Amino acid sequence: MIDKIIPLQKNDVQEWQQKLISSLPEITTIIFQLILGICVAFLFVWFQIPVAWLLGSMIGGIIYSVIQGNPQPLPKFFITVGKSFIAIATAARFSWETINVAATYAVPLLLCVLISGSLSLFHGYLLSRWSQYH
Image (tube, rainbow, N blue to C red; front, top):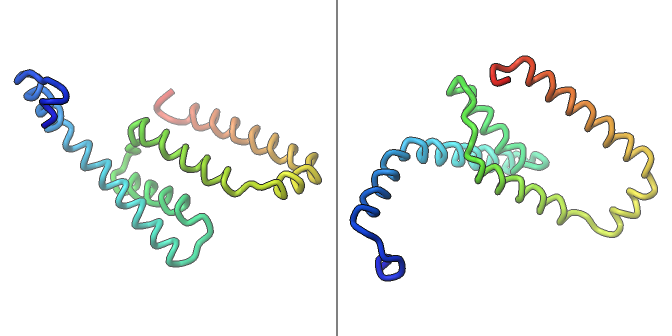
């Protein structure tokens, strides 16, 4: 059926199949990471831990890295999709009332943002100096 939509040569199909077969170990690793993150997130939801889906998947990733002995980052596509979900979930919680409260506490809020940002940059600097990937 796909041959009718996109005309493929026999060599193209074989090349596509070879790429798929050669990437099966990576695909199974990604699927295992996702399943582990989802299971830990469900466990966190069951224990009624706040922000269960975010914390659960992060803890699942940490568990996977500890078991493997080295970090196994997901492909950039999954990272981008994850960041998009976090941004949408965060933005959905904001309302005009949130903005009014934030305006009331603008100075302490900006101070917290600046301090958190500075500490994060410093933390990133230290990690880059101490890691093997610099």
